[in-house]
Image (tube, rainbow, N blue to C red; front, side, top):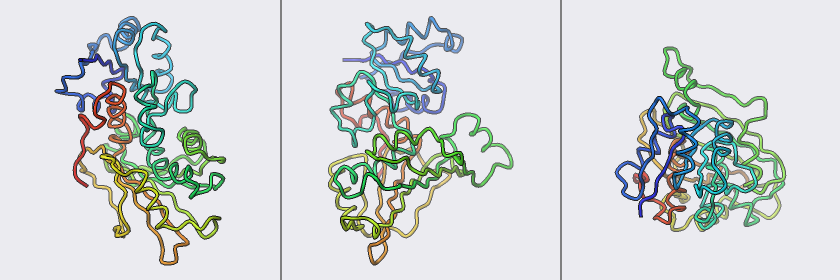
Amino acid sequence: MTYTVFIDGAAGTTGLEIRQRLAGRDEFELVALDKARRKDIAARREALNEADFAILCLPDEAAREAVELIGPGSGTRIIDASSAHRVAEGWAYGFPEVIGHAAIANAPRVSNPGCYPTGFLALVAPLVRQGLLPADWPYTVNAASGYSGGGKALIERFEADGAPAYRAYGYDMAHKHRPEMKLHGGLRHEVIFAPSVVPAYRGMVVEVPLHLGAMDGDPTPDRLRAALRDHYAGSEIVTVHDGSDPTELVLLDNAPPSDRMELFVFGNEGGWHTRLVAKLDNLGKGASGAAVQNLNLMAGLPETAGLRLPKN
């Protein structure tokens, strides 16, 4: 069976990478609007309602408007790559490794996770769920991302002469990723989120430092690592490294696309301190790769079909 897919916002960074992952696949037929009709409401409404799947690669408000264009009887199933519906009722959170593959496969509406929350939740959510980390801990997230995740304006600034070597932001403590981290992590408190952007086009490192010695229940780096390895056992996308981890991680400015995610648990000799770290491609598992993974599941196909999964 061939499914029709309309990517609303196909000319943007996320949309283009989704198209690349779907290119040449017989299971999907892309519905395309020419440049003159991309912003035509009637043309978009028709495409959104007639496609089997609609993938929204739009700013938040435009994504909400696109959902309103889809009639209740259309049967179109939606994947929203914006942050508009990540904590909304009636939407499945598109992180199958965390919420379950069946929840995605059976959902009419799926909201893709944010790139930073993907790394944070991959590390913290399984451990909180198993009781190895407390739900009421004041978690901190430190992260650095390639500049491609910042949209067209940020891409233009970084690719211009004199681009900064480092750009930190989110100092208003109101970043839009924080609600999904709290909700889908099963946490009682908002996280302190410290994001930054570096002059690499793609790639991301997300870190959660923890003082295990101040927690109840005697959590140790070895126990946390073992729990994560058990949770992701058999995954072709998520790799949990063993204790022989490197002493440094790097982001390359010419890294190839990847839909994998690597998880690390670093600990000191006494086991009192640990740094949980996720390394991923902000445009891969953090955006386009996740959308294609969810599309595969919703269409009843192997979840890794069309994904870019180079060896670690």
